[in-house]
Length: 409
Image 1 (cartoon, rainbow, N blue to C red):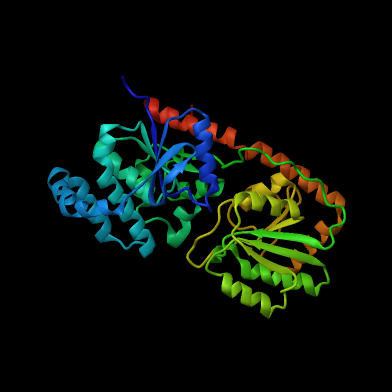
Image 2: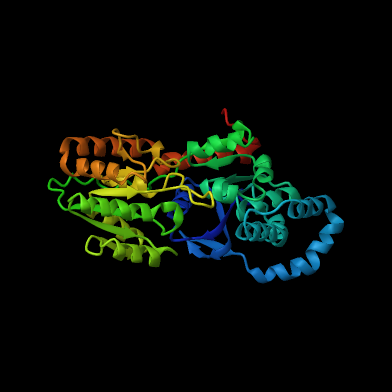
């Protein structure tokens, strides 16, 4: 009895608390009836939504190095030659990206026999780093069709992934979640016909809370990893400007990361200890509680020195859905959702007084605040529905699994 075709979904780490959008994707694809097998190349593992997450055991790399690579030098000299040319003829953008690609190559070398016993109809890498490397090489080894995501980190961090061009050129299709990403890939020479822009989405929309009529003190929220691209030192200067302007506020920062000690020191230096609280990483339910508390969400994203930047952070449409007013910097794809004076307000991070004016307006102008909230919720319902968007992604998968991808269908 033949088994139904399945998609092998490859992740770097799955499930991961900071990547709930991928968990939503998996659950939505599962709800659409697709048969899935989940593979986590680095961390994660265990079970998710009733499915086993197969974590790559790294000990398997030892026999790969001792036996499999020498054997494949004889059996598949072209593939091995191309890999060695790629490794030795150009520098990886970072050591992290080098090892990510080596991890993907190691996974492909260890798992291709297992896949041959139960061949996937499609291999899909959630990211264009290690997962896409694995899919690309599995395709080279045995001809399996593969597709990949390509998102802001893959495209911009240190100039982009080491083997990005090779992997994307051979993919059946490339999933990006922003028009910014789509335009950048086209500018880098990737065929327009291969790229699909399909946004993430919410499984269920929360109630849109009513506008808090007396927004004094103004309740401000930031939900972010404490890393350079979030521009949080700029955000602290905005809070200092708010205090100096006499606008009474409370601010909570949800999230954790390597910058926390220096950010907390900056709070003390700016004398913001009574106004700004760091509450660390929170589970999803607690994050929604924070959104229920907040009047406004601040996003102060910048382009980090490494080139890394956000696409459209999921917290922005989540806040829009919950009825929280959003003020964002005009960096990356944030303005694909936050249109100035229509669905939120936009201000440059290096202009604290502009932020003061924007937040004062949201504090005092009920008509403006209500108009922005209603339009923001409408945008999310139209563009950020996980069921609608995952159905589009599923159509891409099904076309590849049948007879190849055709973006014009």
